[in-house]
Picture 1 (cartoon, rainbow, N blue to C red):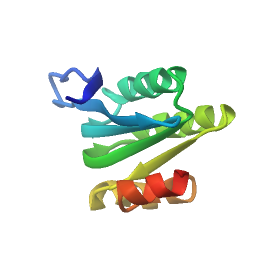
Picture 2 (picture 1 turned 90 degrees about the horizontal axis):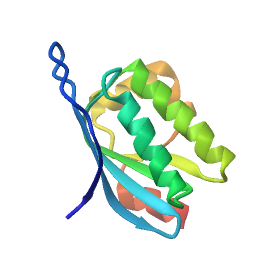
Picture 3 (picture 1 turned 135 degrees about the vertical axis):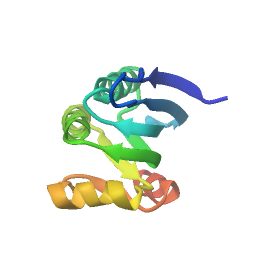
Length: 129
């Protein structure tokens, strides 16, 4: 069973939730899967999950966005902060399997020039090998 490392509480107004689970971890690479919405209500949980993952020895973090339905500017900010932190510690933040609507947010914001975006988890893992 996957290890749940962060669960967002639903807001009364927006019903924003995010579930973050560790899919795998090996050779300083952790893969986290996100489900739901990454916004101002839930972004802190992702930040805490990535920090906990790095502190447990994973310098490279791969986020699988296959089940991420939405990302806001607050979510983008957390990703940028996490990427800087991981790079400071000799690692990287990679993203894979973005839905079209989530990818569009990255394109419009210019974040496609900042992050490594992969169509599949396998391609991202192969790039880290």
